[in-house]
Length: 259
Image (cartoon, rainbow, N blue to C red):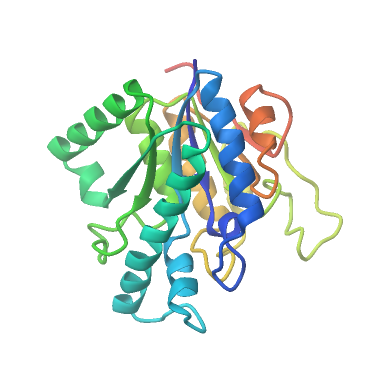
């Protein structure tokens, strides 16, 4: 049995207009359910609430002001969890919603409560689905900032064996593959160096908040705590099998095992 945290980005779950990408999310749920049937403990960190709220509310574009973003998140989170609950139920799996702020992971007693709840949910064979509490986290103290960092912090808190970040790109390249067609995928990164950081780009898709820099930060956190991390293309959920079985896929960041 392995304890695996899977983070799925907005670009995997939705189209650019915020509408649900039904094909992608149905395939993702099927693969995660199969991995859970194989006695793996699965924790899902899911982006997409704001984007789905934008689609549900019929907004023309992503809001600029905080109150509108929070409103979209509140609407979208309901839609997101309803979708997950309905799809996982078809495979006889129970899901649980967990919304977090930075204070929940930084303050000792709240962090302990979180760890206890997560462990009990996994003991009960429920699948926790986590997201940052966007309707509450508005400042630097309470905000985690992005779900890549959230996934890494959750992985550390629950002593996960592996974190998988599902993105809109195959992994880390030696240059920007959207600009340079000759860019080469880096299969393994043993250390996050200044050179590695220098080849990371900026933010991701318009509806998302993460980019490669946030993924490298997540990798560094995991590696320092002995947790492997893999970046792979979220458009192909079957790649999760390869990542878990240590077959070459995406970019792997091996955790330090000398801890």
